[in-house]
Length: 610
Ligand code: AGP
View 1: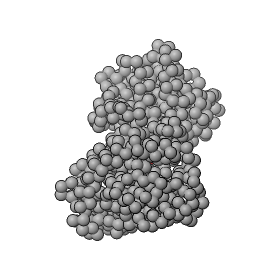
View 2: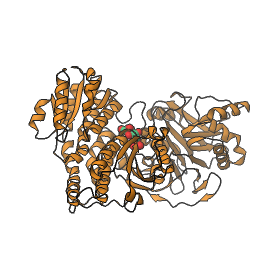
View 3: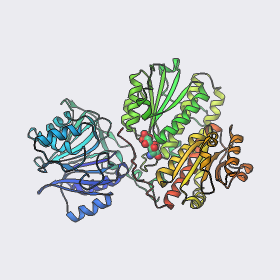
View 4: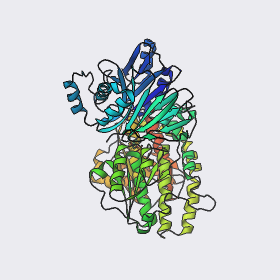
């Protein structure tokens, strides 16, 4: 996924574009660039590498202008080189365009345009857009962009400017690559995501799929790609500028780990009553599917899929309704969307823009399934595609590794499972009230756990040089083993693998030796004794054992090389607590290894391509 910025107004566009690209750098950071229109016409500056390299290049070029676009790239077609960086221009540098998405028919378009005499310089799919717009430029930039989009197949969010018309910026969207417009007094802003507009504009308009926006100093107009006018009231931005800053933390990831008590507390607000134990989940109420429900299918990617695995387990235990947790890219590819009128589909996504998850939801809806999404971004594609949406209230999550959004998702799936337990009559209301009260106490226990950060850093220092780490867990602890492994591998580049503890002796045990730490989620619960046996099997092969143990469990602590105590909590709520030491362990190892924990190599915050 990539980051797009745009500005038209009375001020110099460059500072806004660079500041916005820096806030969007989590979306992609292989290369970056910007294009400005000023008295000298169209000027472009772009570099491989991060925004800092672009800032140096721009300063050296003394680039200024009141109309411009910018881009930070996560490469899909073509290596991250200066030539492949965006913006891309036509041969005569009359048009500049930046793009997020994939143009699936770019090769055929390139052949046609080359036959017409257009000369290409990059290996990207995006460059065809610049040549197409230039081909139609006689119609004026807005209509030229509209015309060009009719030739495009695939997903795109684009911003385009032209030297011939230095007063207008045109944006267009086809598919699920987001674009948000910020309205100002005598100026207008464009961004791929809200963080870039915080502190800049308070009134925003989301550009929808199949829509085009024309931004001028005196206002913004929206149309459908076939020319129908659209009137959309602006919405007020949900948070302040500091939400998109690190404040006193060294990294966004650490800040967001420490924001988890609030993320869970806010997600539970007005949904779980600590006094009465009541659950209020109107997003589930009135869904007629509940009366004939024969399956719940969670569908997601990555960390969100791990939340789905926890949800699957809890839904089955609480309600007796069969549940699955589908990896989104396999779901729609494997045709799992059978005749699903009695199925509740729960797509889970932090960004709400993950292409695989959106495609899976479309397949489920086409098969007749009712959908209730769990999503962290208001107005995202997923939030608008699902029948209903349970918004997690984790706030903006900038770090590429998902942390506070994950525990917010866990609190949402827990509420959903308890609610289904009441609906099906499987759970006694008094038990649900007790669990809900315990759930409301989780944020305070999370805060206690965060106090272990320094101790966990000391543990991390002992293992930061390892090449392989195994994570083991059983039952509800198995998804946490997967999540711990994903956190470690994605920010420290250590090969880490999560496994069901019982499966370890069916293969992975061959990996165990004195150099291979094994992280065990060994909290007191239904599978504690079996986990203890697995730990003994690891120790018998000189494996070093690091265990999350229940605070006060002296026996469990004695059994392992390193014990990280987790406050006691009901089994169903333990994933919410286990997440924190696993995140801190991965974070500290990543930092100790000198990795860029907020923007790990090759990753993007939201993968908006399939
Ligand atoms: C999580 O740390 C990763 N960044 C990644 O697995 C992520 O969870 C996945 O790409 C899904 O993203 P989403 O929640 O925005 O859909």
